[in-house]
Length: 113
Image 1 (cartoon, helix red, strand yellow):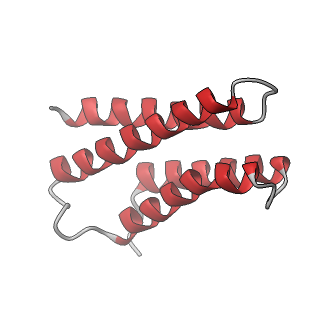
Image 2 (cartoon, rainbow, N blue to C red):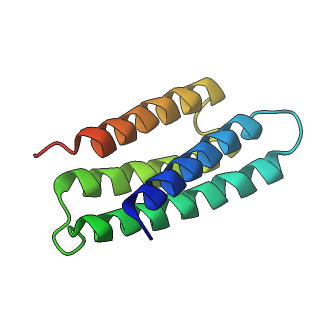
C-alpha cells in the first residue's frame, strides 16, 4: 500500500477517535462512542506503523515517533478517566485537543530532537 493510503487511514482513525470523545459526553450512546474511539485508535496505530515502515524508519524510530506513541496512549486512556470522573469532562476535552494538536504537529513537521 502507498504512503498516501496509510496517511489517509491515519486521518480517518483520528477522526473516529475524536468522534468517540464527542459521543462520550452525550446523553446516550456512550458505549457506541467508545466503540468508535477504540476502532479509531486501532486504525491510527496500525496505519502509523505502516507509514513508518514505508518511510524506512521503523528500525530506528525517531524521538518524535515515540512521543506520538505516548500521546496515542494518552488519547486512549482519557475516556477511562472521564468515565470514572477522575478528570472533569471539559478538562478531558482540553487535554484531548492539546494532544491532538501535538500529534498533528509531530506528524507534519517531524522535528529532530
